[in-house]
Image (cartoon, rainbow, N blue to C red; front, side, top):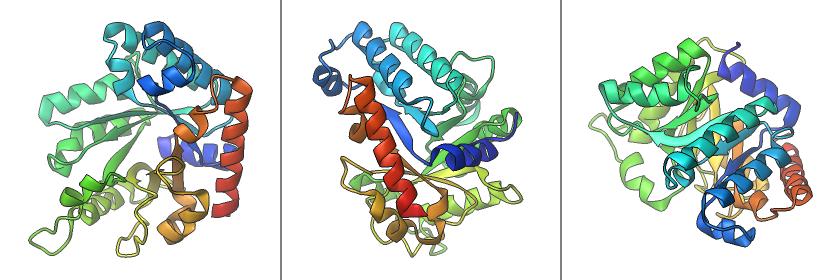
Length: 276
């Protein structure tokens, strides 16, 4: 299997760069007329996969919305991952794991080991126990052709108190994470397997060198206020490597499969036009 970066670049070129979230939180289940239970969870997830897994580059299940139902919810997540990958979408597990030593290794095995029923193409991780704490996930991702998306400049307002904190050497934390990722991706092409999460709602990011070799997962398009047209302004020369993440902007058109497909196609077209 080729590396994640190469697979992602190919998928972006063929299908467009859109990432659609699978976020079955209680309010969306209610909007779809579904009960807030495992049956509703399964119906929701299966419908999203059926509607868009054959047309978008990436599907991003948010594991928390499955975990809240315990083992039966995780079983639904396992099925969703397998069905999405079988339909040709890359699966980015949004679990934001971050720990140290053997615990980080166990988290990595849960999502990045082919022997796991939750095996995904990539995983979101938190580096805020120090970038070096991610070493077990980096190693396993390399071994199995997977990718990581490291939280760098997130779209939530609270993130700045940590991510923009300035170190003793005068470099802020977010820039430090981007520098680590640049080193991870050195020599990889056309796209490195180690990406960053950078919010599309953050405005001018010209103070940061976003050309770090990997993809930039960009939450915030749609319900959080950013539009496809904002992407070139926010990401500058790195815009060709941006993977905009849209959840509610697509999911609110469910449970109608046709509505979901039309929304995904429309937003994908807007993104393609904006990034060139």
